[in-house]
Amino acid sequence: MQRILQDDASALDYYQAYFNNELWFSLLRDAIPWTQNHITVFGKTHQEPRLTAWFGPEYAYSSIKWPKRPFPDVLLEMKQILEQELSFEFNAVLLNYYRNGQDSMGWHRDNEHNIKQELIASVSFGKERPFKVRNRKTKENYEVLLGNGDLLVMHHLQEAYEHALPKSKRHSGERINLTFRNITSI
Ligand SMILES: O=C(O)CCC(=O)C(=O)O
Image (cartoon, protein in one colour):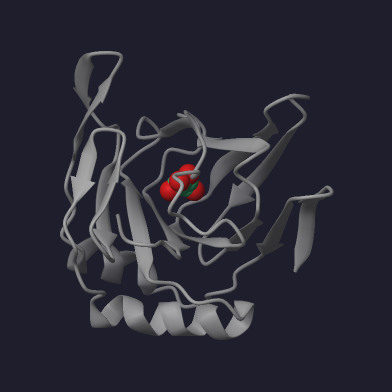
């Protein structure tokens, strides 16, 4: 494990190739019911530049509402492995499927009040893609190249930092990311 950043309140840990099974990417791509949501920002509605899926309690953020949906077997095993490793319980996961380098996620925080901030675990499969983190005040920034099976653990990161997965010409391969969270129902 490598600690990428640490300050008084926050930490970011990186575990390279934590899940070393090559099959996860195609398994998830083919088994998950992906959808492309519409999102409304400043009164304008557009399609999100990626496909997504949600498992967990009913949940809402921005203009998106996810109904309650139980974890499929394929994700229960991964959840249990992470819970043991991190001594933390998860009850929800958001999946993002980036079909190419034009699919992306803008700067944001996973800071909805009902997400427990102690720990959010992010797992990546498929092709490598740079993940960016920056301090909201100092603008100090960090880049982690996330590859197949890598695990990133965010501890109390959302208050002072924001993160993004920018578009990339160089890293244009397919990629799936899962963020496991513990949320209280809305
Ligand atoms: O795809 C990634 O690595 C980022 C995902 C992310 O930022 C999120 O789900 O909040």
